[in-house]
Length: 344
Ligand code: MRU
Image (tube, rainbow, N blue to C red; front, top):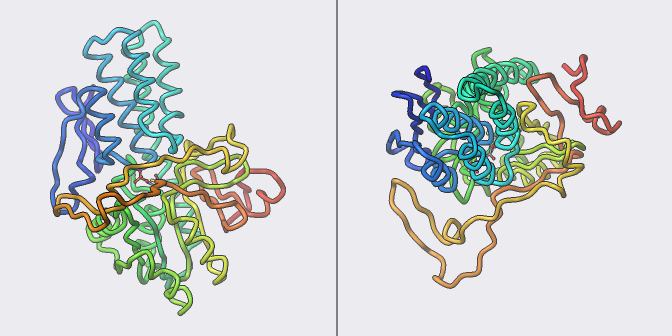
């Protein structure tokens, strides 16, 4: 396969490499993801993370394994192992459905390679389309709040919600970005803060518990988040803490936007209640670990509840900015989750 480089994925010497998102921003380590066990390990540990990136990394690995001579049956098994690596982000399943179809082609080695590269190219374009549509909704002088990490690290392109923010900043419309740390795994504090710094976009890091008082004091003009799965009725699963922000935004009359590619849509899920929510290890809540070290502050025996995502009901969302256009609350209330031409 040709050499390929995104912010956090690399194909070189016909092998896949990933930028360790758990070690960022203190360390920039490119790690091998040369077989299924390695990549699944990276996905479990969130060294590879973000809905679009998980799907793209799995697709690229399958294509590379095919090039290295893996048999069709072996690839079919690997595909199912990769599909089960994380349950909530549907991009993984959507991308692998396309790879599964390529695997049925007579020349499946060629077909898998072409499909994986097409998925990467499409993701770049999707991000650009989202940034274009979303930035049109940002008012001049905006102070925006974002949650988790939805930037170049999590996609093959400029990102989703963070791509919108970056484009709006280029257009001179963003005064400040409030970055919440996103406990327990700190994707905001570690990754979004780093990306905004690289892009020279002004931001201030806050703890998750500070968002409410910022909204109450009129210092947040809009909230932009990504999505891991959007149900047919517009309910959105995203990083834990998204729902709290949506409730707060509703109370304070602040627009709350979701930015995502159409590969995040799951029309098989009638509502958010049907979206599987990943439960994660207790150690993520009883302490914190990263390249900065590790510490445990809770009792060894503490009982823990650690869902990785929550569901925000459609009624709390001001707009769904997709690569295909903007879905309005009016369309969703009418039972039609489709972008409307006049949404902007
Ligand atoms: O657990 P993570 O870090 O993979 O969760 C990521 C998110 O919730 C993002 O908001 C979502 O995947 C969109 S990334 C463009």
